[in-house]
Length: 368
Image (cartoon, one colour):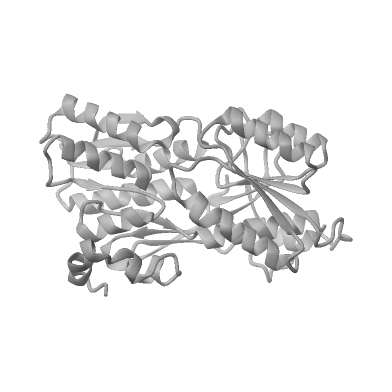
């Protein structure tokens, strides 16, 4: 994968990717005659519900953008697999049978779904991998720079540990699902920052990203290492960070170490306000989802220049090389920049975050 130059803007730890996929850019190909008008159907396959982002952000944003791009004539056929790879295969088969025009696929299991991607290809239905890189002959990929996500998390942990950090500091890693290729990249990115600077005392891959599995793994780490021998926890996402915190509290620990997250879920933002969670990685779901809808509609309508301008990067999966792609930037979300990220982008209002339970903590950080 071509690495993109990273600019670091202190103190908010914003990591910007070089511009890729700008709509105003010129494409290398000439415009093709549209193969489909506005009366089109986008199949949307999302992987699970444990992470609230899919139901709250991705689906409604994509649905709204497809409608806007097609003068309300286009529609989205939606299915969520609830972390069941077999169920997702069945959902994809139904979309192929229903002859949708394009499929946006966020795979439960990127390897297991490859045969279904091939079936779609054989049926002349383009497949765009969304958020997770699927195997098989996909036409394009849109996600965030996943190694960068892990790097941001790793750097944030080192920042939390302070200038005296060294290999005596013990870190527990609560990684994502082993069937999700993103989880591997998050872990690799984090390790690129942590290795040699701290000790990775325990590391777990968490089945299905489920918070209860993360809680069980963290309880095992606490039992093995001891309550006072964990200096920080790398949690790959916010849902699992919630499970990690439950495990600490169940062990009678209220003075929590620094804990990372990802996805800027509302519960996590509130935990950051109170200090229970150190940080999350904010990824602009509106940007990702709206761009995915643009890619899908452009692909179906044969708008090659627009499609090329949206997919200027290239990435490789285990089965295919040089896949057209766009990678979206990420931000380390801490107490210092809640207002300039999730509030400014309209993800949450102050009233959503600063409910009665959190009002005092919000006021203490100037959030009111």
